[in-house]
Image 1 (cartoon, rainbow, N blue to C red):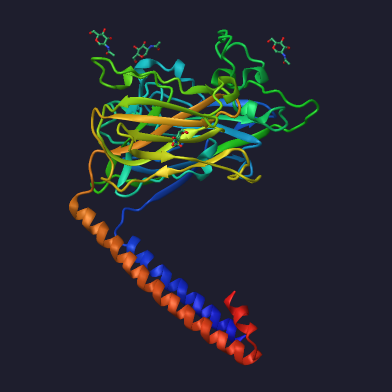
Image 2 (tube, rainbow, N blue to C red):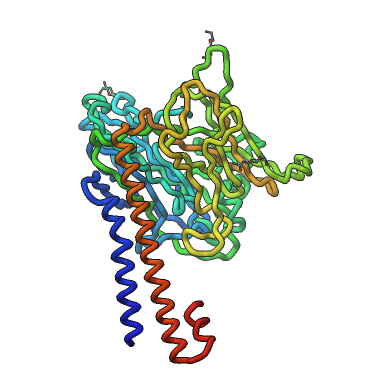
Length: 465
Ligand SMILES: *[C@@H]1O[C@H](CO)[C@@H](O)[C@H](O)[C@H]1NC(C)=O
Ligand SMILES: *[C@@H]1O[C@H](CO)[C@@H](O)[C@H](O)[C@H]1NC(C)=O
Ligand SMILES: *[C@@H]1O[C@H](CO)[C@@H](O)[C@H](O)[C@H]1NC(C)=O
Ligand SMILES: *[C@@H]1O[C@H](CO)[C@@H](O)[C@H](O)[C@H]1NC(C)=O
């Protein structure tokens, strides 16, 4: 009993000590991080069914703020996370727009019906014409870091940026596929047209005969082939999203959002500038199986690379790629081959949400030291996207999101953070040394007691294990 109490005291002591540098380093006058958790409008999915909706005027933090992170996942009515092998989250996208004040937009409106004079896109900074979102991920969403380090943030709600007479609102697109009981889970998640028995697109236009799979075959309310006799209930689901933000003030440095796409057909011309209008991004592509290409020695890796001239400059703060199953990594290089940022998939190994075997459950991200990676305006960068070509894949993606800052923290701020970090590291080191010493002393003391009690040499082993 006595021994036990001592153990507890030691543990409490360690916890108290470990807490100290935390409050020293992060307490004080820091801009407070706000967190809000929202649910998208509900959607209902039965076995094999697809939902691909755009929800307008969704819940979102208001005011002049800097976004710090955005995470999302599919949950059921009870709020339980739903695993990818039941509801595959193909993607979700968050976009901004401005709407004329007084014009009512409901969650289920169709943007095609908006009066163009009442609606202005509030897109990101580039560079694909058709990819204007601020955030967007898919199956990897549960284990992909999205936080933006201090002192940076994505500035939104800036009254100076909102056209006069308009207000800022947010849109969420959710594309989810229910694969309970389907014949071919991977095929359904890759939107293979034959499994959906789809030959015309959403608007009734016939598909090219060589179009085997992709978004044109898994639009809202199509149905993937289910095993005969499989019965499954229709379920009510939501996208639950968590937004973190701080109030905008002069200590926050804004970052801009850029998205690159491996299918971008941009080519340098004599007068090209690299601006958005020149970029045609197809978003999806197919991976031909390696035996079909006849290249036996390529290790069955499909590597795509494109060159892009940057129409902007700044400091890289964050980067992440979006790939589908089969993806083996993506990277941004300088022209001389130097890696600027690489993002690799993590595949799940189990059953539970966040670790589903065979699915990409996370992507690694880049957080370069601010200032360490500068992009110059006009610089040529290389985007690379790798997939395993052991089997055929349709509708895969190779997107790359980066956050870029115009400014570095001013020297005072940098020095301040530096001292803070250095200070807490030194303090941490000292405290760890103290904890370690206490630990060693305690172990020896207990060990000696043990030995005295048991009088044998095996006592040490028992303590030391
Ligand atoms: C769109 O709005 C403008 C200005 O408010 C108005 O003049 C026009 O008639 C509207 N068009 C439609 C099709 O409602
Ligand atoms: C596939 O679609 C065709 C034409 O739309 C229809 O006649 C046929 O019954 C469908 N097959 C299945 C298995 O649903
Ligand atoms: C380049 O200039 C030519 C002639 O002015 C024009 O036709 C062409 O569209 C331009 N190309 C681009 C990519 O802007
Ligand atoms: C992509 O594949 C190529 C060729 O196998 C390899 O050299 C490169 O390092 C890979 N890139 C990433 C980001 O995994």
